[in-house]
Amino acid sequence: MEGYDIVVLGGGSGSQVATAAAERGLEAAVVEPGPLGGACITRGCVPSKALIHRADVIEDIRGAEAFGIDAGVHDVDYDGITDAIHDTVYAKADNQTSSMRETANVTRYRGEGRFVDDRTIAVAPDDGSGTAEITGETVVIAVGGRPMVPPVDGLEDVDFLTSDDALFLDERPDELVIVGGGYIGAELGYFFGALGTDVSIVGRSERLVPREDDAVSAAVTDSLADYCDVYTGSEAAEVEPADERQGGEGIVVTAEPSDDGNDGNEAVELAADDLLLATGRRPNTDALGLEATGIETDDEGYIETDSRLETAVDGVWALGDVIGRQPYKHAADYEARLVMANVLDDADRTVDYGAMPHAIFTEPRVASVGRTEGDLEDASREYEVATVPYDAAPLGLILEADDGFVKVLAGPDGEILGCHIVGPQAPTLLHEVVVAMDGGGTVDDVAGPVHVHPALNEVVHAAFDELSSRAYSTAPDWRDVGDG
Image 1 (cartoon, rainbow, N blue to C red):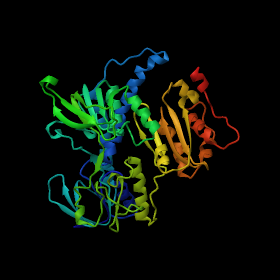
Image 2: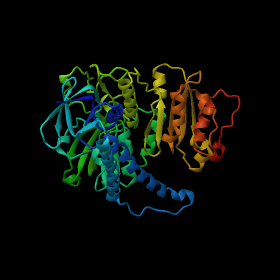
Image 3: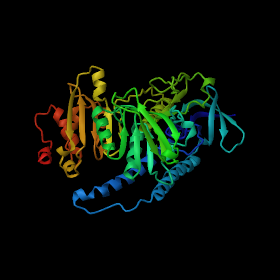
Image 4: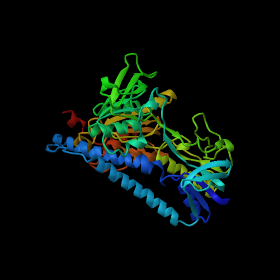
């Protein structure tokens, strides 16, 4: 049995804890059956955004006529696109494998890990060789998650795709039903719709991306209707293979009104070549053998930790999708840094997600940080709100970003409570707000600095200026031109 100072289960963000420990001269092990880098690199964030970039290029070409440019899309090499993206992301995973192999004091175990006791892990190598047992003075659980498969009648009798499968298809589906109205379903709906697939999206809530601020979810729902047939307030009740009456190939999804729907919804039958399930993700904790430990999980299988990310077992930590707090790669990286500090420096740091941003890569783009207006109303929190359209900034007007806006929520004392941006470059524009919030700044700290003219950041400036207490304003406002 091999003993290590630190054992990390998972080759994504958690593996950074192992390499940081190795730099301190500690012996570390990483247990991961698949490619290094986690889901983000090979089956999540990066390949999906690479696909979406192609959709953006197509949409730019199709919209060129509005700017006096005659252009058109004549062909799309779909297989070439997916092959190129696949090769790029897996090259990155291979490079991370090579880098870890060359790093002193880090041992890679390629296989599934399962707890024997609180600090002993049995590793079943994927090459079929005998199981090895390793121990760690400290153990970090960061095994990520996987797509959730909902309990839909008939699902066992049909083939279906998950978000993992949908990224590297050899051919573009002609017709596709997406079950799930969250950000994964919305992003893939935009991608396939922009490339010419007839897409139907079935979402339980009255709007897509329902966890966003109401103004954001309304904008995304309206926009996706340009690319897809959107069935909100509905849920997939049954799936069956198409019969001869329906063409004899593909699938048929029966969507019925959901508990979150309105009384006006009716059941519909949606026929398509393929079915894509985008109903969320679940933690990869069910195969870890946690019953052999004192580690506690909630009813959904997420590992419970304290505010320092330590589990119920001293010296065993968890981060990323297995704790289910913030389902984003950048959040897992933040949590990894916190675990590094607590394990290696005994820093006693606690998590703070108050300025944790996120983005949705639809058309238009979405980026948010902090509270939504609904959150504040539910908490009976006093707040002020300003919503400024993109055409307040001259570049927003030039880009004809008619559905874009910046929405700011602030306390009476100027505390930034939330910011929600819809429109071009939204994920980039949000970051000055994140920096201000992370440093405890106020509305004036965003409205005060000089903003580049005529860059899009001026719309952020204009929105925060509306709530600013400054005596003088030079924020741009070109809405009079747009309205004219």
